[in-house]
Amino acid sequence: MTAMHWLWLGAIVLMLLSLAVLLPPLLTETAPAPAERDEAMLRRLYQAQLAELEQERQGSRLSETDHAQAVEELQRRLLNELERPKRSAAWRQSPWVKRGSALALAVLLPVAAFALYLQVGDPQAAARLTQEQPDAHGGQNDQVQSMVDGLARRLQEQPQNLPAWVMLARSYETLERYDDAAQAWRQAVQEAQRSQMDAEVQAMLWADMADALASARGGSLDGEAGQAIAQALKLQPSQPKALALAGSAALRLGELGQARKHWQALLALLEPGSDLALRVQDDLLRLETLSPEGGRSVAAKAKIPEASPSRLSGELRWAAGQTAQAAQIQDTQAQVFVVVRADGHPRPVAVLRLPAKALPTHFTLGPENLLDPSVALPAFAALRVQARLSLDGQAMPKSGDVYSPALVAAPGASALVLELGAAP
Image (cartoon, rainbow, N blue to C red; front, side):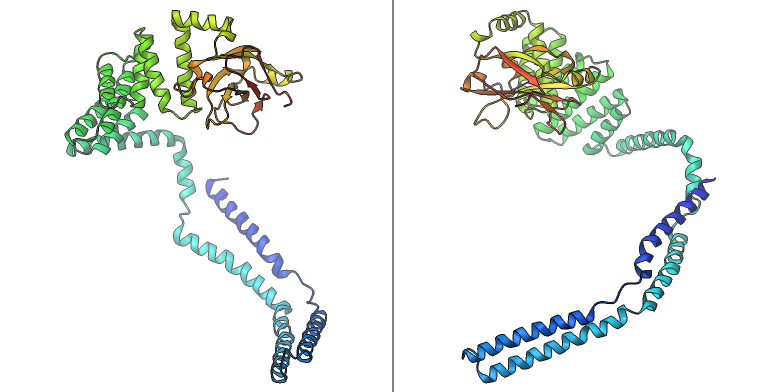
């Protein structure tokens, strides 16, 4: 069958489905309403209200004149109610009204739909679409390239259009044309300086230019990229992308202290517990293992954790009866998050992320896992520690996560046992 055949077949099926929903209620014979029963109910209601009016009159709460008017009004309402069903029932109970409506609907709906399609539709659209499908992706790529090149040509005539330079640079990055993206960011920086944009905007543009330069040079952050990072931090010391790039540049040069300084400043700007914040924490933890002093310090604290109130440590394992689930996650991206909370503190105090396939394992949380470096574990008398398994590795809790019972511990506790899947 051709594309046109499928198009008309689909239209006919939809039409039949619509009629199948609309016609049965009109063709179904319904039993007449029990008018006699309704009239009896109305009469009983009338008699009850009439008795109430009589009691009101005998109790001198209603005068003779008011009583007569109320009775007259009650009688008039009763007559109206008894007459209304008779008038409406004649129309509702007529079978030809429903049959005529069904016939008109069955004829007019297809005719109206066909007329509307001929007026605003395109019968050859499906055929053309089928013919264009083999080269659809290539045509889309060519169209995007053409649009980007057209934007570049217009900017040669309107070089003072800063938003357009930013759009062009991001478009080049999407197309992985990083040299062209870097050049577009240079033009954006120059235009921001010329128009005296505020320092925050200029710092963001410098950081974006450094990122594009690094991508064009295989990740190298030396030379012009390093200068752009420095300029961004000079304009705004808290520029997030510049701090991230500065930490990476310092790590490449072996300056672990500078890398730690930049990443700790970046961590303070991020939403606690977010994926990006946890990645920065992972980088800081990696610095601890790379630093000779830091490595010895971590090892020493792991051996005698009870002597360090700034740390918590223990064992992370599966609860009894969870071996089947443990086997299922060996080849997945599942992650375990060990979260430390404290009463009166609105957000987690510290978070440690570990691959779930490493269980059972020993864990240690310390200053490098704090979400806010200014708030240390010894600041709290008691801490609640709980582990959470995320099957998709996401930092935000969701349905289907597996938890361990929450433990209450003092800072410096070293014998914690967190069992995923254990009953609380």
